[in-house]
Image (cartoon, rainbow, N blue to C red; front, side, top):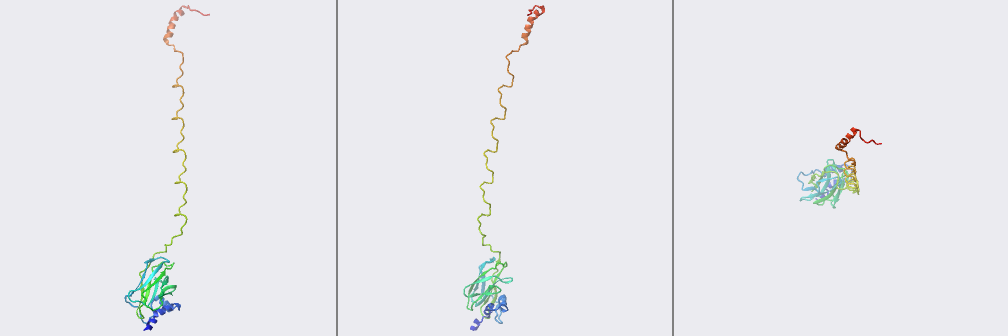
Length: 251
């Protein structure tokens, strides 16, 4: 029965991927089904799982993918990342039990190197910089020539946008703010005057200068006003003389 393990046609067909440019190569990449004559994929629950270290991704992100046997080891496998159009991204193998295959793009699939029993396979997948769709990782597990599982899938990995983890280059300016000026709050320079009031005058209440005269009254004369009583008395004394004509004539 060694012939059974040496002729894993699935493995041989996948190895043919690097030897032929079309035909069976394209069929194996797209269907992920080993050419094991009349044998078909098992409909039983697969004893294997496909897991990822993240549940969403961005362009150019690297995701770690693990193929794990629950109890029974597997001898062969084929792993791809797929969106609705087909295989996407590229893989990097980790360890000596796996090799890269070309399914339209170099490194777009991973397969086994030998038919020795395997319980764990780990590979890293890098998202393309142009992809913007959700993906899932799909694997075919070969346990024997007649028993294999096709299309064992991981949980969906959601696309969440472009990679924003790389910060933009730092510039010498801070927050693109204009340079600070030496003035404070853009206020005009302070003047030496206080409250913009006019200079104080020496005059008080804007009143005219005081004159030395008092109440603007005319100066007092030294003459004495003759009262009417005195004049009358003199007149009465002179009246007899005037009447008699006896008055002294001068000169």
